[in-house]
Length: 440
Image (cartoon, rainbow, N blue to C red; front, side, top):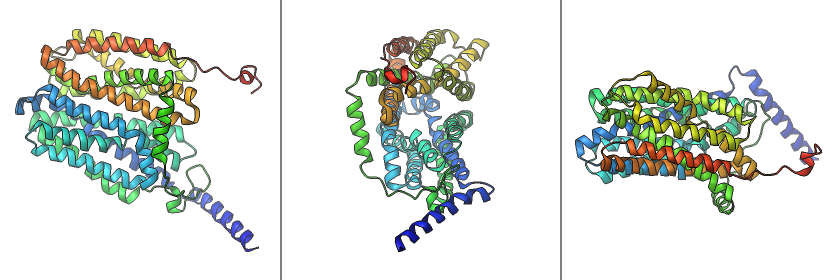
């Protein structure tokens, strides 16, 4: 009898908690979403910096662009390799603790670089500290917040948080470029460190790991008790990788997404500004063009998601990579001391294509790997960052060897053509016969 009474009381408490949000003007989930948005912007500040500092560091210390590119490449590789485990860390230790440590690592790396005197220090500060910090705030962060705090409006919140990275680029690229040109690279690095540190108190005071921590139901859902800290999530992450690695589609998806990373973060984000500066374009003008990409990649991603619901994801990827490769072949002819209409057209097009590959890649992961698709996509995302890391390093080496970036643009165009062919040979998963016959 007592057990029945306790169960009824628990259900009443759950229903009362679920009704609580309707009496609030603003559900706590939206506050958590805003804090997440600001956190991603603060973490994205560093991603705006490396391309702006290649020339100043080369000039001041005499380090080769290959040495500087090595630090950037380690940062990108760690970003990708940390991402699959970030969700497991948040399940084990909580969102708030992981994010505070991650922001502190980004701030420490950016601030310590002000006093560096050797290239190996650049690798430690930029590569190791910042790479681990930004990797812990990758897509897994926004996905974890969305899944825990929202039942309704998940698509909207996901889109908003995805846009946070582009918004950060839009804000910090022109600002950091102006600081570098007017005051030098050290104040720009301090600015990035402060941007990360300023967010820490907001995360600690306003972020909560789970709606149950404040006695609420998730937005649009019913009250759910907070689960015990998850154990073994990291083992599952590795096991899913081992299983997926035995299949051909995984390597095709990982290969195409590695080329995606190589031709975006590794190539354009890292080397576009110094390449444009080689042709006499002011750093602020080149950085502003790069920031514009952040505006159009939001539009391109949303439109690509709409197309993915209607067309074969493999063919969409093939078209995206083919068009990207063609545009890169023309880029050396567009470089000039001033911004002209053909260059603006390239920037708009590249922005639309920048992350348009994400929805069809995610759809193919879902089609191929079912309930493990989110983890598989995390590893495919890791390959994206490894590809970016390789080109961030090799692009700098090529500039040192050839004296210009032209060879880098041409080689990247050829890689994109390869990715288009790889996308087309990904096998389709046949529908169950019952579903095909309209019986499922």
